[in-house]
Amino acid sequence: MRTFKVLVTGGAGYIGSVAVRILLDAGYSVVVFDNLYQGHVEAVDPRAAFVQGDLSRLEDIRALFAAHPDIQAIMHFASYTLVGESMHQPLKYLRDNVANAANLLEIAVQHNVQRFILSSTANLFDLPADRASEPIDEHFPVRPGSPYGESKYAIERMLTWMHRIYGLRYACLRYFNACGALDDLGEDHDPETHLIPLVLQVALGKRPHILIFGDDYPTRDGTCVRDYIHVADLAQAHLLALEGLERFEVRHYNLGNETGYTVKEVIEVARRVTGHPIPAVIGPRRPGDPATLVASSAAIRRDLGWQPRYRDLETIIRTAWEWHRTHPDGYRSRALSSRSSPSNPGRDVCLPQ
Ligand code: UFG
Image (cartoon, rainbow, N blue to C red; front, side, top):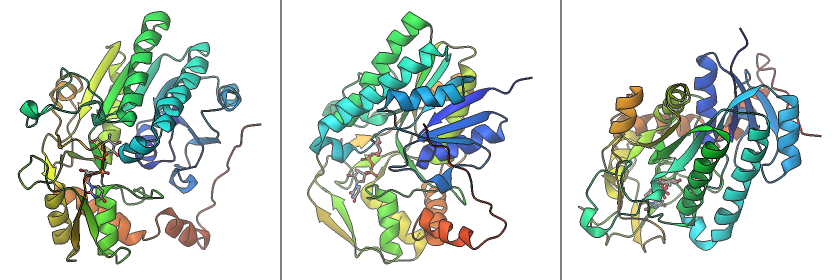
């Protein structure tokens, strides 16, 4: 029997690389497409095919499909993802994220791809004050909190038409705050902007303190509340969503642990995990940050039987700490150590013509 081939865009990135691992372990054949601006070739599982290319160039995508005409499904992770940056460079998001997805879809439908999983975001929601404490389910009105969220919503809308016109089945997975690590796959962004890795960099002595973006929000201690979800649980949801598209044509799922933690609470847990005092300094709010974002993930639990394995923030931060402690320079640490290891043959990188 021919194996089912999945294209993972952004498969060298933080969440995409873990999804690749889970797909391969489940017996899928995987091709990773990544421009390596944020991703790391060291993060690509050697069992996957790897094509370096850019979604802004149709010729790169055509070359990818020419080399892999048997792609049957796509998980689309590749994207600009920073809420704060999108408030300063809105068109990088509104133009590039949307145009890159359109390029991918154009070639995908020509090749009769039948299933598509979109990395979407909790930033689709920016709750009015009178509903701020409610868990956000899929029926909440969409009101993007930033150009980043707006760009993801535009792609969600694009998919409704791809389904209606071409019959493309799709699922939009709206992540809340991805975090945590596997032993050998973790978060390595440059620059790093996310709370948990920054806090852990303080514990590693790489930063003097963590700057808290505002303590005047209407929350229990004045700092923003977020729902932190382990990257392995997110990846597992992708696998279930892909298989769920056998039964369902279109699905939208909000993915979180259904528990909110303030920024100060996250720092406190990280102090316990690392044993470091992690000094914190209060700064101004960061534009684009909603006060509270907590998911209701009842729909994906009910439809697909999704069960997050990492429910407890301390355990999640422990996995992230293990990664940062053992990879203080991210994948560069691994590249240096693996270069000296004769058992690691490295991997071939295939560049588009
Ligand atoms: N924060 C700080 N100081 C920092 C960094 C972050 O106080 O140095 C705060 C932020 O203000 C926010 C919280 O920590 O309240 C989490 O911020 P992150 O930057 O880690 O994550 P975001 O909530 O901004 O964004 C993440 C993803 C988005 C996704 C969003 C959904 O990066 O792609 O979660 O909640 F849309």
